[in-house]
Image 1 (cartoon, rainbow, N blue to C red):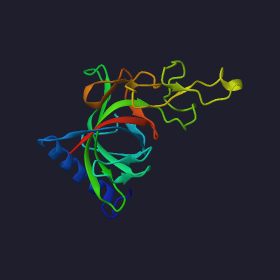
Image 2 (cartoon, rainbow, N blue to C red):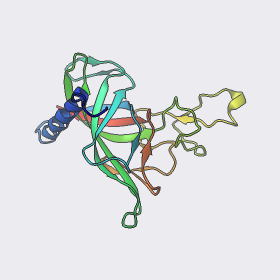
Image 3 (cartoon, rainbow, N blue to C red):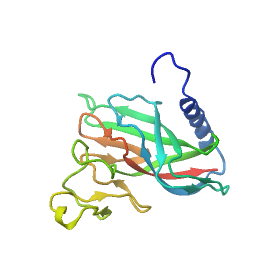
Length: 203
C-alpha cells in the first residue's frame, strides 16, 4: 500500500484480532475446534519481517464454527509474526514464528482464534522452477499429480491432510514448538500460496 492512503481496514482488523486473541489466551474455557488449512496470500521472508507484523492467509476450504456459522473457502485468516530473524554470527539458524488470531466472516465480523502451525507444505499450484520446493524427498503424504509419462521428470507434490505434521516437501526447513520455523539458511522464506495446517482453539 502506498504512503498517504487511508489506513487498511484489514490491517486494523488484524490488530484488533491480535488483541482479541491475547484475551482468548487468558480465557478460562478455551475449547478445541480442530484443524484447518490456510494458504499465504503473500510471500514471507524472516530477513524482512519483524515481530508483530501482520500475516494474511485464506481458507483453502469452508469451515463450520462452533456457533454453526459456515465460513466459506477463500475467507481471510489474519495472524502476526511472533519471531523473525536471519542467520548471523550470533545465530546459527534463521527463524520465523507465526500465529493466527482471527477468521474474518462474510459481512466483516471476525472470530478470534488461536491458530498454531502444525504442518507446512509448498503451494501445490506453483511451478517447480523458482520455488523452494524440495525436489528430492518423497513423503508418505505426497500425492502424485502428474501423468505417468512425466513421473520421472516431475516430483510428487506433498498435500496437507488432518494427520500431517512438520514440514513436508520444503528443503532445509524445520518446524519447532509454538509454530516457529527454523532453517540453517540465511533466512526462512515461504512462498505465496504456501499451505499451512493450523491447530485451532477458540471459545
